[in-house]
Length: 379
Image: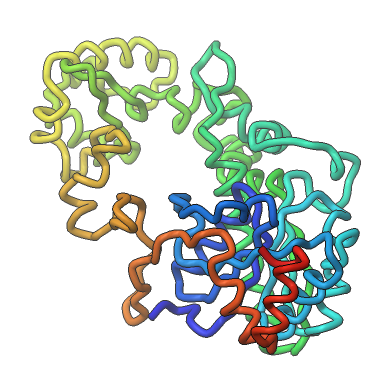
């Protein structure tokens, strides 16, 4: 079983980072109870959302005080609750931190927003692209002389959001074991994505690698010829990244690069020229032919795989990095542990699939559940 087995997390269903954090908890063995709203429960069709795998789903009409009371009852036996509302919404529903922690002083209350709970932008709408704009992350991603390129919604929603929510909640739960007191965890995607930029800010502050506050001109942002993506003869791509001198030397030897031309690894002025020359070299063979020569060596070269290709790569297959859940191939639980063995996740539940089971454990009998369902409190 997973390392978080025995913990109970309540997740107020939403989109993006909070459900991702809930998936991380469920993957590691925690019991995650996802509270869906009535409109989402209608039809109760099976869901294929990967972020919902391994969870229990209950359907509560949180506009009804009796549904709110049911949720507060669940908080009494929970270790944490996570939500992704705009600031103030949970309080208006009667399920804010004070309401929930009054029932369970040890409860950790995780709050996931883009801007944070306070500040002049806290009530404004936004998405990943906006949050990483404010942190400096988006500015640094893209080609020289071109506009910034949004990196999907990986940096704000998931790296700077969901992962920081999971880390913050686990940290607070560990602290609660010592202090006996819960607390609120205020997670902002702006601050999380800024934290992900720590190394770049460090380089900028210390002038390491002569780091510039521009994109596409630095060692790690495709400025360097030895940290780039190159097209191959068959229209596919390779990632190239031999930064360290000994790896760069091996790379040159393997590829057959002329020492006089490619010897000055950190001659920044020649980087654009060397990129053009390398681009021509990589066009002479197919991706697989280059991989046969370079992959698995310290030359730091790997194929750029599509989402369909990635699960089939021998390394990913050997480590079982991808799993099949409900007939769908998807990334497996990560990371791996020496003793704890997280189980293969169960498919995402139908909306409201576990309402009766979970509330029965909380003390509701069948007559009460039937009455609440008849009155629209449960669905």
